[in-house]
Length: 498
Image 1 (cartoon, rainbow, N blue to C red):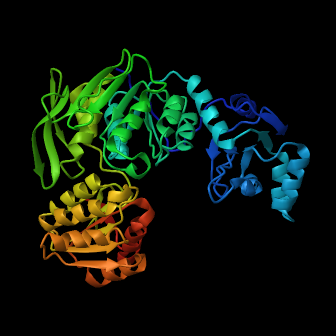
Image 2: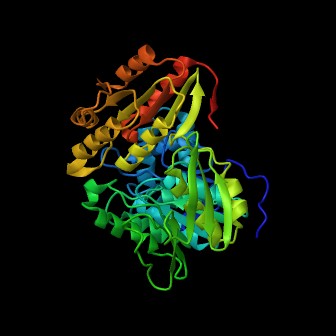
């Protein structure tokens, strides 16, 4: 087993890439500047540069980021991909238009490297593939409908018992996020844990061919993105494209408790390792119990057994933990060592982070939402046995297709049979949760809010010391802002609940 390396810092720089590498990887043309300029970072946001960045202006549905090239260069970018400029004269005109009378921005733009490419998004992806081809370290890829990020973090924790681990930063799991993640793998990493997301047909195949993972984890097949993909069967089909570009002798780690995954057979010579609570699973959990809401269980992987005590709440976390232990098992880490590291994991920002703030327990699960994760969050709320009042602040679950109102009403039915004391609802779809509560014949009171300001005012007027609050909704609904406001409003130190 490998020994973990020291000095693992937050800043990551990819090693040995110069502007000439960008030109080569993207099949581009050097319009201005030198080929020996060191590139240390990649940015898609013209407002945020760290120095020696490559700025990649993405053309979106509403905004073409080519409009902000000079802003990026003025902020410190050293190079830029461009599909709109084809000559030094074009560059000169762009600088005159965008830099205006600012001599510093103009000077930096004239010194920078400009690389013409056919398509900036594809150029970024090509560069990610170029970087992947230069590295031989094993990569573990994670996908699924629910729990990808938490599972990623848990796998990284378990693998850290034997390796120096690099993992996807933040939520960089998209067509542009994955190539940046691959490009920024530091030279001293021994293994990588890469999250791969998808929301439309063909997207998984594109990013999987860049990542070229050696081991792939699929957490579950739910209804997230069913609006774009039409059915769970189509979602499964798309998720299985994680095998595109995968090591021919790689391993698929599959949730054996998921009805759509338990019978999946890998392609070619690849083999499957199933995890879960069922006897069909090679890595399974037994003797599960909750201690004040925190899962405790025995993990069994082959001939090894180890007790696992998690610092994240809810029985659904057991599945994520077993996926992590299965990955650790694949890479030869003793189960007891992996379980010990897993027991140190305390959650990830916006995903069921639990802390006390001014005498109030806050469950911040505001980053995203689906029917499965919404019920899981409510389970954690209900497990707060000592709470004076259990309050659920719930917002719309997005991308659920034509059945979205029914999915929301089902959440209301779920609340009707569980010990929730008050419900605060934000969004038109969230109103259906209230209808579900009424249809269930429940007396749980709920309040409809038109915007975040109403949410904040309600919390100010009604939350008392000893209460427990769950914040849960799709990221676009902005409940994370309500969490931030609540922290500032209380203006008291807060600590994790362990």
